[in-house]
Length: 123
Figure 1 (tube, rainbow, N blue to C red):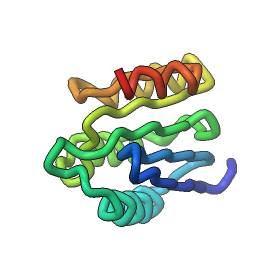
Figure 2: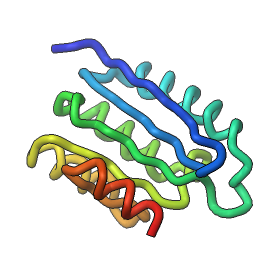
Figure 3: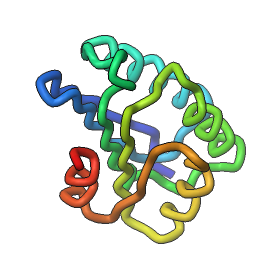
Figure 4: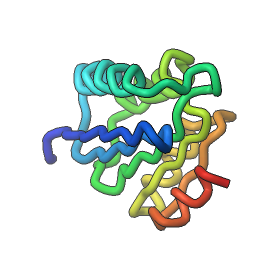
């Protein structure tokens, strides 16, 4: 299994956060990511409009353990890192199914095409 890694880039003019994630995460990795995402959100001035637009490419992520998937589920419902709209880009049907379960009723969509994901964010 590959080690967890992520990158977070912000585009303040577009109120956009771009995230790339890969590997197999531990609960500690989720916590590290959460801290980094909150730091990125502070670089943007869009909280009063419901937060940033976020695109998260998880195509390089392994299927996560049940414990870590549960931690991601907690993360996704935490209002501290709410995005106005959240688009995920996946590469496999299995990852898509796991992600759809975690998203629940949150304003988020799952795509296989990053261009479609970004278009959806801005519509």
